[in-house]
Length: 243
Image 1 (cartoon, rainbow, N blue to C red):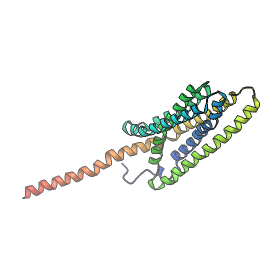
Image 2: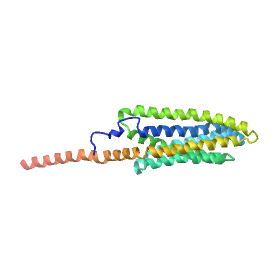
Image 3: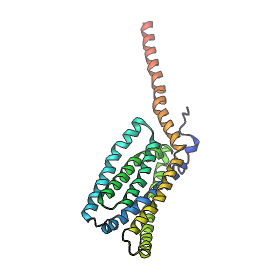
């Protein structure tokens, strides 16, 4: 086992894992932030009152917050962080598709809950994978890059979504809900690309980081502690024998 720190491949903070996580987060925000911007107008054309929008968003945020509370514990207890992150990213397009198919508020609520459950599931585990792939002294730069990419997606996605919505409304003025559904379906492409990205960037880096983390917690500490205890016991019995 390497006792001198992480491998040389992780010495640079802008490595494969950090870059992939940033791009994936940018594409993810492109998807669900676009939905957040056009959702009020979509519900209006469906005849759903504004109070329903508040209830839907509040419930979805609560689900995401509670999911974050136990997702980290589940991953630490049972492992499989990469699988859980992929599930979290995969649930977002599923919820997006449900919203695009909705004709009333119940299916919109289900779609929003599914998307936000995936968001709460993947967030802490993705951050853990990124943190283990870099040196402690470069974590500020790595997570700063990640948040910057996240913000880029949150700005570009809604802006482009509004432009596409205006173009679709001018092209099909008779159909009130069709342009909204068009933008929702179109944003699914970026979400699917983002899910493929997280699968690729964590294929090697995430596995190496998890194995190194488990090895450091299960092997290095006992290797340092047990010999010291044995020496102390041996010295005690030797002193008794001489006495």
